[in-house]
Length: 288
Image (cartoon, rainbow, N blue to C red; front, top):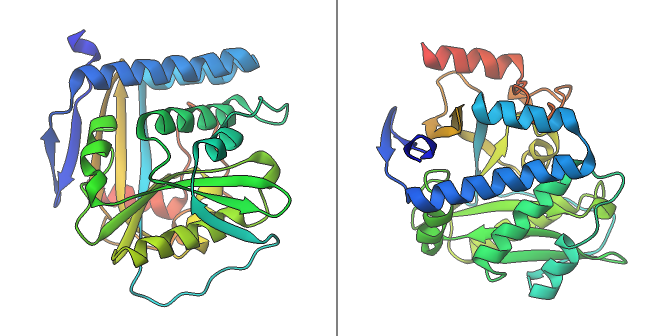
């Protein structure tokens, strides 16, 4: 069992500092999530994705991008093709968004993303979640808005993966749009309204994290005005994961489109992350 325990590092300044998480809960969580993800690949008979996921758990490195939105700056709201209403989520809203059957067009990875959010809802409930009602589509988009009061809950469920929020900070995470409602601009408009809610609560900035190979999330966050703020590195070695946060390396642009060109393709689940040349050069410079 000790070999399965995960250590977590969180960067303070330029040097990482180790933080001791709730080990027993952390191991149980990771085992449940990995088994759940493997079952989705098995269910969809995506054998390559299954083998890649196992290989990634044994030996891999990944890079996530921490982003920040300055709520004190003026910005325009992006219009969309559908009327949109943002409101606090109810249990029935989340059931409609997350409990649909696996569509033929939905990959095992996409189905897993929905299953992961069901786990978050089961642990945190609907109180911190907001949903968007699109005209003719019903509840179609969900996103969590976290405040400093949620620091204990976040560290309990995901120790070390998220920073401790300052009194004037908020965090948005776990965005999900149903397959039938995608490509209508709902995610961008929903993100804008949720961050407006954070502003009304007194937050001066909003943070979030995205994968460096997730073109959809990059587009949404770039359109909403987010800038690169930090990096989140993860290292998997024989079922043991180390995760830490780092400041944005000197010389790295804060503009997402400059770090990751639109031509960057989303990598196959479990395979090495593909990043843009400018991001790779900045990362290499930051390690020297």
